[in-house]
Amino acid sequence: MNQPNQIREVYIDRTALREDNTEVLDILSAALGAVAIEQVATPDEADAMIVTGGDGAFMHALRRHGFPNVPVTGINTGTLGFYMDTAPTEEAVGAMARQLAIGEYTAKLLPLLEVPVGPEENLEYAANEVVVERASLQAFNASLRLGSGEFEHFVGDGFIFATPQGSTSYSLSAGGPILQEDIEAYVVTPSNPHKSHQYYSLTAPAIVSSQTEAVVTVKDIQKRPFKVSVDGYILDDWPEDECQVKVRVAKDKKLQIIRFDGHDYFAHVSAAFRGKQYL
Image (tube, rainbow, N blue to C red):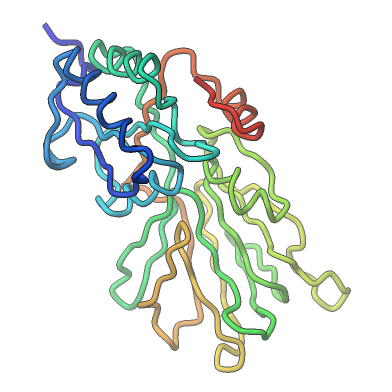
C-alpha cells in the first residue's frame, strides 16, 4: 500500500530555465524514471510540482499556475535559492527523487499575502511581498492602519509587506527582520521613511499578527501617484481613482512547500547568504 505522502506523478515547470542549465532536466528525468515517478502535463494532474531555476523562477511558476494546490519543491540553478532545496547534481537530484517516491518529506503550509483589487475585490496573491510605493519623483504620502491603530502621517518611498519566507528578500534590504518561515505573522517595513517630528508615523519595521489586516490610504494621488506590486509584478489594472490598499494574510490559499527530512531553516538561510548550496 502506498504511503500518504508518496509521489507518483509530478509536473516539472521549466519555463524560466536558462539554456546553459538544461542538462539538469536530463538528470531529473533519469532520477524520476529510476523511482517510477511519472511526468505529467499540468499541476492539476500531479501529486507535486518541481521547479527548475532560481527563486525568481519559483515565484514565476507559482503565479503562472495560480498558486496550485499541490506541494512544490525546486532544483536550484540560480543564485541564492531560499525556496530551492536541491542542488543540480546527479547525487542531490537522485536523493530528492527517492525521498519523494517514499514520502520522506514534509509539505509545509506557508502563508501568502492577498490584495483585493477593484470593486469586485479580485484577489492577487504574493509569496514574498506586497509593495505599495511611489510611482513618481514625488514622495509617497499615506496613512497606515494596523488593526485599530492608525499611523497617520507617513512620508517616504512606501511600505513593504513581507511574508515570513519573503522576509529575506526586499524587506531585509530595507532594514526588516528575518522571520522563521512557519511563524504566524508578517512584516511591515517602511521604505526610506522621513523621520522629522512632523511625520509621526511608522519609521521602523513591525512584526504583525497574521490575523491583522493592514490598510494603506494614499493621500493626494493626483499629485503623488503610486503603484502596487506583488512579488515584483506591478498590478497594472489597479483602479486609477482607488487610494486604499488592503493587505492581509490569505485565509483560503497557502503555499505548500516541500521540506525534506533534516531541513533546517536558518542553516538554509545562512548557506544562501554565503552563496553556497544548502544540500
